[in-house]
Image (cartoon, rainbow, N blue to C red; front, top):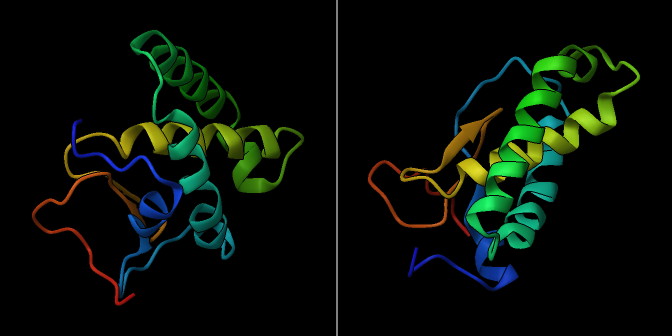
Amino acid sequence: MPSAPTQFAQITSRVRLVPGSEHTQGQNLPEFLLFALPIAIYEQRNASPQKVERIRTSAATMIGSHGDDLQFRGKKAGATAVALVQGLALLARSPGGVTFAGVHACLEDHADCPQQER
């Protein structure tokens, strides 16, 4: 992605709440994602295809195995939250980005991109 942001401030501006969105996840999840997603995107900005694949596989396995821990505050909730953020950060690279729990993250301008006054 030649036009993808590389500076942390640029990345942070591309992660935003979706105005008027409703979600059924935990009350604090959007705030957590607004904090953690830009960090994960920044950390992954130069990831090789092999590293992307390792992150994808690890995140999918953790979320698939322990997603209920995240939802119900089980023993692996912290590790699963990290896996969720890592997976969402990867999805932010895709065309159109990703929207989850009322938070949208993308790395390039696209049609229907939720805009929030900044």
